[in-house]
Image 1 (cartoon, rainbow, N blue to C red):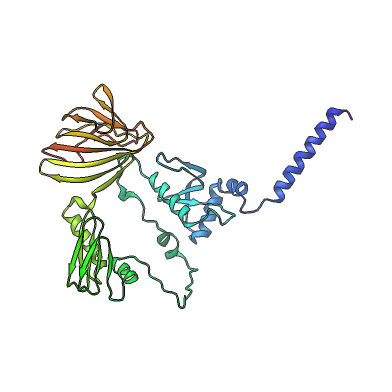
Image 2 (image 1 turned 90 degrees about the vertical axis):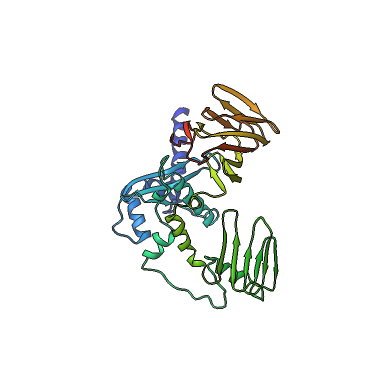
Amino acid sequence: MNNTNLLKTGFVNERFRYYEKLVAELTMMSDMFMRNVLNILECAEYVLRVITENDDLELTEVVVQKDYKNLQGRSAVLDCVAVNGRKEIYDIEVQQEKAGAGPKRLRYHSSIIDAHSLFAGEDFEKLPDISIDYAVAEKSARMALVPLAGIYWNDIGSWDAIAETFSDSTGNMYSGDIIAENCTNTMILGQERLIAGLDLQNLMVVDTPDVLLVAQKGKSQDVKQLVKKLKKEKRKEVDENRTMYRPWGSYTILAEGDGYKVKRITINPGAKLSLQLHYHRSEHWTVISGTGKLTLDDKEVFFRENESTYIPIGVRHRLENPGKLPLSIIEVQNGKYLGEDDIVRFDDMYGRKAE
């Protein structure tokens, strides 16, 4: 046997030992094995039927190693994403080690699936109500109750639960800049301004930037009735908060009145607003921190801290952050109509449709 044949034989034997070892270490939970199994629709369907205890479950689509891109943060590659006939989405993850298999990872995966479940312009209400309670717990025939003797448990699903969990010996609970005198069994929560309470009993006072809630203790679950009333009256507070988040960053309404609105706008590094115009308002921008690139019709200019610019009514404009730090500006709007729907988009990097 010549040297060439010897080399070939040695190579084949080495590869054989490699694959022999690979097969010997292969288990049902191995990524390589499950990746190929779950790539077959019928196999993924069978796995989900066992997990959900639903023999009628039928899948229409399976994708292994599904790559979800996140422009604002960490992306995620999911082991197997499956879709059934009702457009419900399942994430099947194969994990051999406990490390990295915690609830926070599950929450992140769920949120990134939700973020990719709607097309531009679709209503958020189209997202399915498919929490773990609905999807698994309420349908399982193998649930068991384990008593936890001597262990205090509170689901903390309401303001009453918060008050019960964190109250002092007098039944009071205060958080924020609070001054209270002669109060019993009272909860006062504040965030920004000073709240003073005098001779209060059995009350809950919750002050947020969006709304002030005052209610009797024991009635916090009835807040949903107020929400229904707000929706019925088509109040803007149902959908709009003082601070709103957008794909490019966020804005906070600082003040508003007849003919004016003042916002603090923060644009993330590398992000930009849509190319847009407004029919009913002009805008004045002043940079608080960072560097902004402004497109005004066909002109492009940079402006920095303590510099300002004016956007007339009906002029195409766009603001972007070309820097590595957040860009913060103060925006003053003036006009007869200042609704958020007074916007015409001509170009948008986030796929939002033109109004």
